[in-house]
Every structure is written in structure tokens, then in C-alpha cells.
Length: 218
Ligand code: SF4
Ligand code: SF4
Image (tube, rainbow, N blue to C red; front, side, top):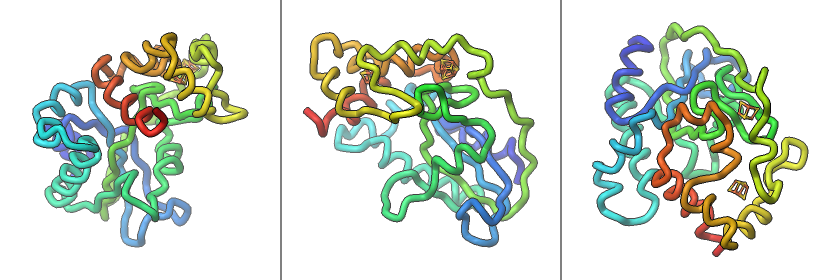
């Protein structure tokens, strides 16, 4: 099994490898695993996803249902064990794992920023392997240097590294006419990050995510 083989298998499902690491005693992985790879949407994800049964059947949580099916298939095909970021408790430590990959960092607005998808980073699952796989060279943190447009993009200052994510202020803004752009095109702060362009996130895809984020609050 090679990194390239896994990357190719994932790409067929609109997924990309967002990073990985070699296991040690601090990562919370069950014993016997040598490598963990984390995966998220590729630039082709939304086009691919719209052809899947989970999207077409128009019932709830299509992306989570799709992730459950696809990561089960990938694990079987690649002789790996799948982990998902939902479905707990207990929950797999995706945030800790993401930082451990060396391809995601805490951004000036608190949320994670990723080397190729910026503030649009989204982990759909992870695969653990018993082999020690060769991993690509690590990138530089894109926030150094950067003019930090993410810091001034939110109209209600709902994002802060010091105070965290003020979801109440965010949801309140989304209920106003001024918040309509966030609802229909995605979070202004996430979109302000130049690295987020690498996610190729369409307005339709962002609106889908925003509808799930905001639906319990309206
Ligand atoms: S806008 Fe710049 S500082 Fe903010 S998360 Fe993106 S790269 Fe980092
Ligand atoms: S969705 Fe809009 S209101 Fe909420 S954090 Fe992002 S920019 Fe701010």
C-alpha cells in the first residue's frame, strides 16, 4: 500500500488526503496502527457528490450518510480502519489529529486553517493503516506571512482566537437581511482567506453547509 494508491482511491469519491502522521503514544489510536491519514473534500467533491444516492434521495444528513458508506468501502478496499468525526460519543480526536498532521494550524480567527483549503477545511473521515507509509514533505503555515483578511471579514466579530466562536452572535446575524450573504454563499470570514480558494467551494455547497449549521437555531 502506498500514499499514491490511497490518494487515487480517494479521488474517485471526490476526496483528497488532507494530511497524515505516524502513530505514537499520544494520538489516541488503537495499538497496531502505524499511519493515520485524514481526508476531506477535493476540489471536485460537490460535482461528484450531487450524483450520489445520498444527495439524490433528499433525506436528512446526506453528507454524513455518504461519508459513512464511502469510508466503510475505502477501509475495506485499502485494508484500513475508518474513523468518522461524527456518530459519537465517544468521538475520535479529529482536532488533535488535524494539528498533528502538520498541515493544519490554529488561525488568527480561532478555527483551523489548512494548507490547501484554508478556512474551508472540513474533515470527512480518517483511515488508519498498519503499515508505516511514506508521507509528503510538510508545507509552511499560510498565515505567515498574510495580511489577515479573515480578522476583519465577519460583520459581527463572531470569530476570535482569544474568545472562540460566538455562535449566538453568528446565528443572530444570519437571521437578519444583512446576514443573507453568509447563508446563501458561505461564511464571509472563511471566504476572505485566500487559501480557501483551493477548496473550490461553490455557493451552492456553502449554502448546503450553512443550512445545516443554522437550521437548529431558526
Ligand atoms: S486569511 Fe491569512 S491569516 Fe487568515 S486564516 Fe487565511 S492565511 Fe491565515
Ligand atoms: S457566517 Fe457570517 S456572521 Fe457567522 S462567523 Fe461567518 S461571517 Fe460571521
